[in-house]
Structures are given as structure tokens and as C-alpha cells.
Length: 364
Ligand code: GDP
Image (cartoon, rainbow, N blue to C red; front, top):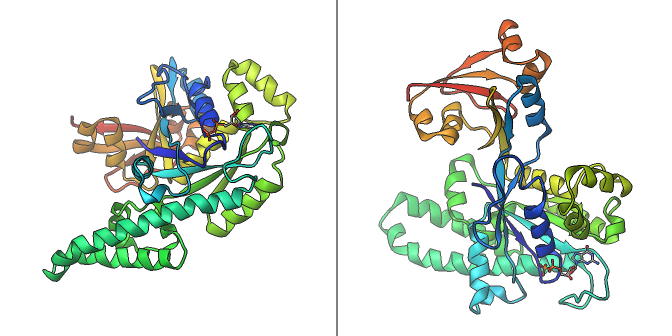
């Protein structure tokens, strides 16, 4: 599945947030109990009100949300890129993630030590980013050396890789992360294969104190300004509040949120922001037995979407009966949509749209 790595300096609230994410009722929703793959890896349900809506219309017996994975990557500190033992392991963990949620301490609390002695989230963000940039530069140098022979031999792939690595190197040497590089469509795949740490999409998570969860504070606003300049996203959250909410059932949680003047749990915003950051979209399969949400990369073609359900469906794909979410709801379900001529038969070239209700016909 798609993985978002939670990174940040020590004592910023990563574990608090991760525990809240994986303990919350939503994470354990439906018929898929929360599963701990490894102690620091959690699989959480992606909250989506559309799923309940579709299930209500179709009178589905159950709903199955789609899920995404969060990884708690603890232990990133200044000097991690120097590769002293564990440092490298953390960087390797980040390499395996598709996106980064960078938790920044925006709360003041004299009882919680700050590693650099003061609360300065923009400075903290730079500290971590610098480690990732140094690590990228080192791995680029190694890889360039390893490519020399192949490049001399005229290997087309190696020549492309070398060109992209040099572009990234120039950006990094100029103090910019690899994600600042604009890549042609022809190079997109090869660029992604380079797996540079600083090319991964990033989301800043501002951990503010309990009484500032709704409003944010001067620290979180400074982060928002920095993020906007980088084209990155921001979510303001109080890890402490989320931890408390995760202990409550849905009704109690709603009441608690109301007393705090919040209309949605911060975790729901965080999960959705992670989902958007990864460029993911959702399609639905809806029937009397179950209504289910599925995750696909944005712009995926119908056969590949079928393949997410079952590999055979992709190989033996015939067509996809397609109803847009809005039509499905407005016309009262499948039959209504069919009668109104809003059920389309889409072929192999169809690009699935977010919210599509799909029924795959296949020869498998
Ligand atoms: P990690 O090292 O980044 O995983 O940080 P932890 O989640 O272990 O949190 C470090 C300490 O900060 C713990 O004692 C938490 O209870 C505390 N903490 C986390 N979030 C908040 C917060 O929003 N407000 C306050 N006052 N303390 C927090």
C-alpha cells in the first residue's frame, strides 16, 4: 500500500500522534481490525463520508473503507546523515515511504525538553531537511560513480539516470531539495526510481498545545508561510487532544470535539491530507453485500483500477460500468442512474475519476 513516514526531531510528539492514529476508532473501523505489521507501522482507514452515503442508498450490509499506512520513523537527529549506525537505518526507512509527514513542535511546555533548547519549528524543519539533503548528495555521488562505465558504454538508461542525478545534484548544491526540480513527463518514471529523500512530497504537521488546536499560533503560522513558499502542505493539530480522542467512542469523541469548538478530528484532516499529498484518489464498488472504497493513483486507467481488486480482473478486463458519485446519489442509486442513461460503459482507455462507482466486467 501507500506509505507516509512520520518524521521529526525527538520530543516533538511523533509517538503521541502515531499512537492516536493507530488506536482511534476510525483506524479500527469496519471489519478490518487495526493491524500492527511492525511496532512502528500502522494501517489506518481513510475517512470518507461518501462511502456511508453510498452504503445507505444501496442498503449495503457493511462498509469497507480504503486504508493507508503510516510509519513512525523515530530517531532522526542532527548528524543522522553521517551514518553513525542507526542514522542510516532511519534514512533507509524514509526511502521506503511514498511521502513524508514532518511533525514540528509548535507547543511551549517547559516540562518537555527541546533538543535544541528552544521552540523554533522553522529552524527544526531546516535541521531535518539538511540531513536529508546531505544524505541525497552522498547517495548521488556514489551512484554517479557506479554509472560511469555504463554511460561510457552508451547505455541509454544509464545516460538518462546520470542526467537526472546531475540535475538533482545541482539543485541540492544550491541548497534546494530535489522536489524543487521540475521534471519532464518523459523523465517522471526514472526520476521517481531515483528514490531521493528530498524528492518525496512533504506535509508539515504543526503540533500545537491543546488550547490552540482550533486557531493555531505564531509558530504554526511561521510554518505555514515556509510551507507555502515550498509548495508543501500544512496541518495544524494537537497530538495531545488526538490522543485523548482516540480513547473515546464515536459519540463521546463528537461531543468532546464540540466542546473544543472543532468540527473534525485533526487525524481525519491529517489522513486526508496525506492521501492528497500522495496524489491518490478513490473509487467505489457498491452492492447489497458491501460498499467498499479503493485507492488508486490519480489518473489511473480502468484496467489498472480493476487490478487493485484482483490481478485477474486487469488481465481479463472487458469494460467498466461507470456511474459518477454525484449521479449515483442524485438519481438514488444504480437503477435510477441506469434509467436516466447515466451509467456509462467505459473501455480500456478510460481514466477513472475520483468518486466513480464502478462495476468491472471481465472474462476471468
Ligand atoms: P517523539 O519523541 O517525537 O515521539 O515525542 P513524543 O510523542 O514521545 O512526545 C514527547 C513528549 O511531549 C511527551 O511527554 C508528550 O506527552 C509531550 N507532548 C506531545 N504533544 C504535546 C502537546 O501537544 N502538548 C504538550 N504540552 N505536550 C506534548
